[in-house]
Length: 211
Image (cartoon, rainbow, N blue to C red):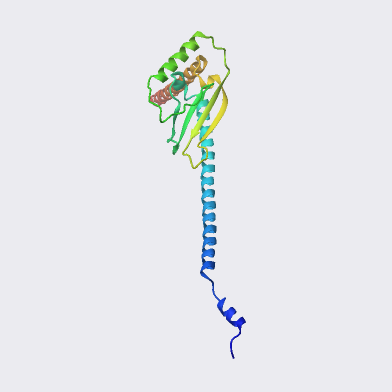
């Protein structure tokens, strides 16, 4: 029995052609590439979210330290209020504090270094402040910027702003008097406890002698 034309056509289409295999490989490769890109984007987004959250927490921590008055001396000496969070276990995060209308310093890597410009600017500001009467300011505007390593095109900093009572930021005469009074009370309490223990010992010795 001779094979018909229909049986020959069915036998010829039993496998895949090279073109069909190539198209399948291209489609699968494109799908895998898209999946890898989506996973990478999700990973980067998660790291960025973690950095933003941690930067905000560290910024609030630094504001709390400023409110406690531990930077009185640095602020009065016009020292640069900037450092890293290495003591808190995050050396990759850095902080900077700006008071009032001061802006954060933006470093230009291409600009030449000038060690005298900052000194001249501070002297000029002091002269302007000395020539004008400063009104009493019950609150001070404080800005804290926390920077971290930039990932892709995402932002690499968090800026927090808060109005803090003036006496908690700047060392006033009242704050200095309070600090001295606290130290005096603490030393007096220690001296009183020492004299009390000494008198107690003498009383015990007298009673033992009478017996």
